[in-house]
Length: 126
Length: 206
Image (cartoon, rainbow over all chains, first blue to last red; front, side, top):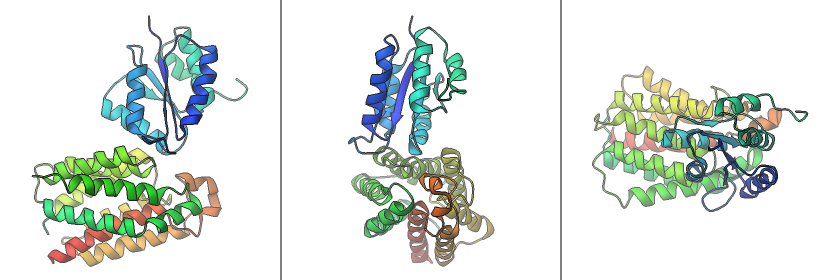
């Protein structure tokens, strides 16, 4: 059975590559895809990269998107609208800590809604 | 007033000329209170728009606006990509089968574009964003039976200049809080170029 996928969105490719590395050290059975930087890998975000990452992370369990600043959220919303999936959601939580908690919960089989719920209360102490 | 494909192409070209001419200026405004990429993003985005639209044959403004939207969405990495892209996408939907565009259709299209910008960026009026220019422009169109190029130019220019004294509440500049006061909002300046160009097209028809 598949697990909820995670997409990491940042203005910087290095940022999401690093976070992906941190998460994959602990979690091995969850699709963690990245969308970092613009199409030519400059600082910014790309709606196309986000769509590609969603496609790769997708299963019937759904996908959660984590983002860093400004346009990342807008392009994440746009990707979902343009693509039209219902069980793909943007999560309003810190990129690193949020995605880490989500990946761990996904790895033990939790649902999209359960994981989204847990990420709402993340602090540095949790 | 009537806007057909040729006039909208003219509008886009004038906008692109202003953006290319003021690329460094937009960048310097954004460097003061943002991340310094607005000039580069807008100049790349609108050059791509012109490259695309000047080599394509259009039978409707709706199709033309849609290509503008998709180009800006895919080629601009900063916040202006999704914001302007959404605006043109909304306009494309509104003008469909209502061409050539008359004053009422333009009013509806710009109002829908503003709603799209508000929904996408979650900003409010007076947050020191492009909303501060789009809102009075939409209000002007709603208030007037006939829209004059000179009025559109004046309203959009005043609105753009009024962002200088505001404190940013949305976008990168918001992190600076009081320090954002005294600087123009770069997105409002590029929106002014868009409306000043539309004003020129309207004036040529008067």
